[in-house]
Image 1 (cartoon, rainbow, N blue to C red):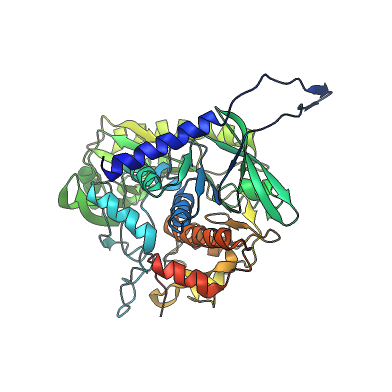
Image 2 (spheres, rainbow, N blue to C red):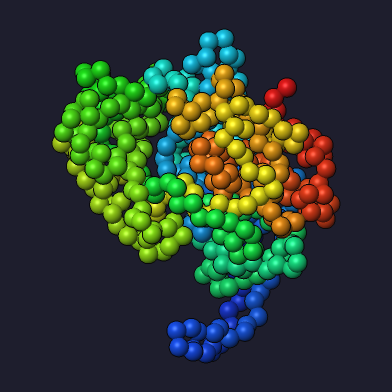
Length: 490
């Protein structure tokens, strides 16, 4: 039996053990009082791990891999049936493993995010699931490279990597509560088809994007509601080459990169431009539905990423189920309208159809979790480093309007991941950074991956040493991260 099949069998056996441990008993009767209902007490099955990672998105996958590779018994809890989060549901390019060197003559090209995130992309490249790192030749003052991924293969590869590393993957499972004693979490509560269960552990990482685990655990947070919500679609039966001609004829090309597409080199893989310049009518209609022109693909006849934004109405919130329900309907109406616009205005798209959508609204921020350190705008744009850096990052999503100084890169400090007031809880991903300007860097996918490796490594070390997040000696963490391939500025 080869290692790959053995790993898959191990994951399935683990799921079987999980099922066996979660035997349902007869339903217990609670009590209603007016507009409330009190549940009856019940005994829950318990499982124990060293590290719990809540949320299997861009940060969570890397966090779970990092923890498991440190030797920690790790469970990754994900509400969907697959992993990947924004990287799979957004469908956009992955930003960015490199510093923004191209607009700055003489600045050295550096791959600043390495380690497990780099390994993931390398594996995707081998099976035709990523473009790798081709340089952008259009709008290179935004990102110097264009890392595109196949969203479905991203799901497969991340799940295989988790299985190979021994992570217990609990998909289709919701985190619904936390067990806290004093300043430490003891466990989390979950719901799945197995029913309600309690998962105890020594260390916990919140990578849920919404900050659910932190909130359940009593962490301090705010809800900024400072971004529109988004859904994206993939269009099939289209031609990206004719889409390019549509912009080129009007001198309206913006984003542009070539790489491997359907196995062939030097093909367009990222493209965007001015709708309004190419067709004023198209531009006006696209603006009404918040549709962006930028697309990515690694396949012929497929535009993998067409984004549509929606600003929630006043009083709406990413933490309100009913606000999001209304947004779900409106965004799907807009996707249909967007498809019709492509059919009408873009040559080669006359028979386009919606081939992919995110299964639910994508957010850029839910709860903002209070951590020991809050990254500032100046930290980012001045390319600052700290005495407890855990990785380096060099992309800003507001470029070229906001850029990191001289094509540089900044360090993210360990304390920016440590949740204030709780000794064994870390936050990673879009949950951190209060300043919207700085958050426009730290929320990006590759930065979230870097945060995940740092948090997962720290949580595993703390679980092994039975110490709190702040008791962990930085040299110990730094050594483990360096062994894990993490890049640090000299």
